[in-house]
Image (tube, rainbow, N blue to C red; front, top):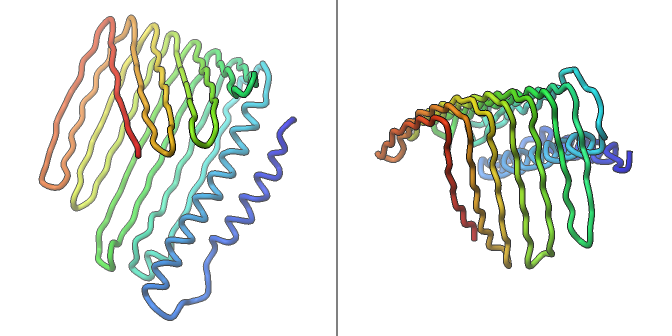
Length: 262
């Protein structure tokens, strides 16, 4: 293996230890600050571990997997519950199966990228986040997300180039003979969101490009499907505003979105 992911895993373990319970602090403000720091450290540990797993998956060449690959992560923020402070607990998991797969990274004249492809792939993802308190008051908040898909052939092509001042990114995904479903729910005193979508397509794809200039980022995402049947329904209520929508697609579908961060 070209990338030493053991070091990533060891570093993730060390950061996770730093995120562990600390001695009691004298003031509520200090306790709240400590809870925030612990949550951020745990997020860093999860990122390091996830990066190690991603590198390991990317380092494989074509092979016959024909088996389920699963991973789970969780974090129980007991301090936020005991001290009635803001803090989130979560549990997440994903599973992947493919009859055959290919992972080919490349580097060419300052451009890093790669090609990932799966034959006969099945993917399942789910996550639940919850919190009980906000500003010392009871404020239950729950977020649930889930995705499932199966395809005869799926692939991803990506590339990155640039420096700290100017950087570009391109990412394209596609599926042949795919069925899919996704669901999202957000429940809190101020927000209620439900989003459900299902579909099937002979061809389905998405292309995303982004450009970062001196910290500002502009992203453009386009999606399309051919030989498809899709349905989506959503409901959103927040801050005395509500939104309801639905979408039905047949034979072909096309959409895009623009996102700006500065």
